[in-house]
Image (cartoon, rainbow, N blue to C red; front, top):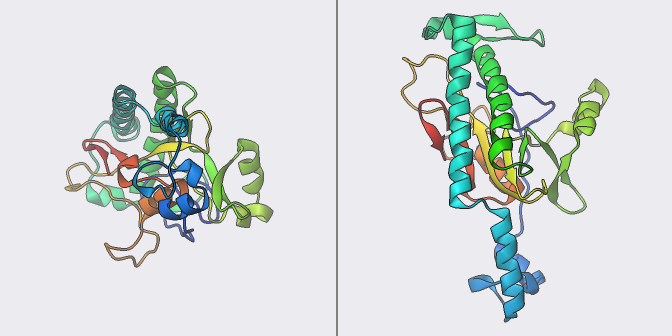
Length: 257
């Protein structure tokens, strides 16, 4: 998820805004720090030892194919189980109608929301707890659940905040400090939260029968067109990731870009 003026673990429509930040291109980075570059973007020859070191660093950052399959298997199961558990607990295991999804209820924060959003919040909480337990078994130390990152103006990069910092900033007098932070559901990293290799966000729907397409990425503005930037673009820019590294986890659909 990404945050404008506060944090929340809810699923369903959550209007947020975010001022996107530009990132250095590969070519520009190579011009300013040529020793870090190999391949087509290189502007000077790189010693073989430096090439090997760079490749080894990349290998340590990215999951291998087997680990990636294990991660995604855990996340898919968590999404499916979360929906089933919440529907069984709050809806007698029955699929809600569109009318029921649109009914207004109060959430734990006293806000009036649709039942669809409320159910999504419950599914989200169950899925995140499930993911924390499941991923610990397959990639211990290489993931974080709902970490919060804030842009460091001095370096132009997103850096993680501690849980204590986040709790402090959630106090009303400091809420403005959370504007522009990003908080994905699941972040896969090297063990260093700054070295992110993949981001996963859970997306839930309310009525199974009425849902004919997978829930998409949240647009950055209420009046966005299909070509406008979305939550996915926010994550890609914040962590310098490609399309295949920022993914949705959806019951029934599985893992989608």
